Length: 604
Image (tube, rainbow, N blue to C red; front, side, top):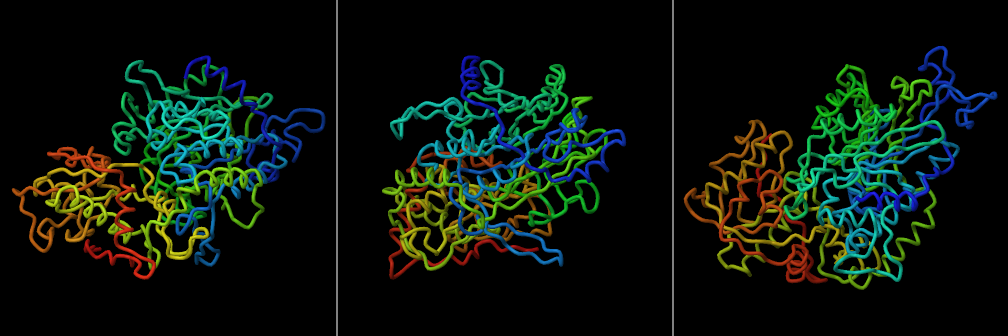
């Protein structure tokens, strides 16, 4: 972004933070945690009481991540969270929707003069029709209304390339589709931070690497990064001309720069995450010891980021946690993630020491809160949703198929994964009758197909909007040739190499079967002798014609062997393929039933 753009951005944004609310920790609790000579600010006084300014000032940090353009309440399991009860049981709670998120955030800020709102990336991309159809302009508008102050980029911010990301930041009409109303899209009021995303030409970050929030004499720096492995989870075209650097090295570099500028309180916004031992959002991942209940990439990252960074807001894995992971000096440091799709937000109290300019880390408190749907809807968000739904309705409400029950996306092999793979195989045979099988990446399936009507279409009706929510990437379905040996290697790459620790199990078309033995390790978990196509063992020397999307065909998700296929043929987009399959194979009186999902035999 140019200096001129930065100036325009600052003029457009008034960083006046809305009135303020009590943080998670009470004044009494903080008093116990602070030095005996310190006294916390009187409640509601913003640090000013008895005629003097207190040494310590509570700053409320509200955060969320991985919204993915979910303006309306997500459907099915994507719109629920699990809550752990005092007796050890769990219950599910309907959650999400920006009409409710806005209300919750606004209520949380009440009475809290020092409040800042940050996000951990993937605000856009893989979005439902209401946002995705309009290149996520509706989501940026919603985030502006939410008073988001700053976010890191995530991998999905690059789905349409860096030029489109820059447009979302700076505004302007889409270069192909133009403007959607008589008003020019103004862009984000908040800065996108991309400290570790460099232009190959200039070697410099494509957007601002950090941003400093200031309120009177309190200042906190924010550094934003996405996962270094972004090129492996985004189409090659989306990251063309870009370099993605190591998260830890980048954050440590800019933490030093902020300190040289006199900014001692620092928060890192990191689009990379972890895996808690429980799916309950309120699980205590510090119950054994600090951070013992969470694993995954964020743990090593957190343990190596300089102690001068005071808290980490994370994302990417769509999980919920509020943990303390030891920093390199062995001291606990808060690491949070608020699930995904706007179902949770995190409320963190950072206690700012005016004498040192740093955060008193021993008194940091953090917890996730559910974006319940039992509060009043925010009228401005209702109006925003209505405006964009009116524009999307002629396309989105069109029926494309019929189902007899929910077709879910969960599980090692999912019914929806089977359905999509079968649709791609059928389309592949249209392109080339010699097509043998289809493979689908699980991360490309973004939502279930739900039987209950989302609007006025009726139960069991699948609309174009619902199909778009399932497959929003506009990937093409391609064909390529693989040898039998390569096909076996592809299946083994699901559980080895970069996927060893967190397997990515491809969804497979009818006729392909094999055994996944989870009692073994690495590539051995895919039992070679069990791999069969239409009952016959895979011949290592034979050639197989395989359908897949262009993301997989480019070697995405660690499937490097798929990038070595030959005799390629590029087809139409994957949503059109799904639509054709549903229309051809279902009617109101003969809907599609959920596939049995019995192609992969799992041994545990």
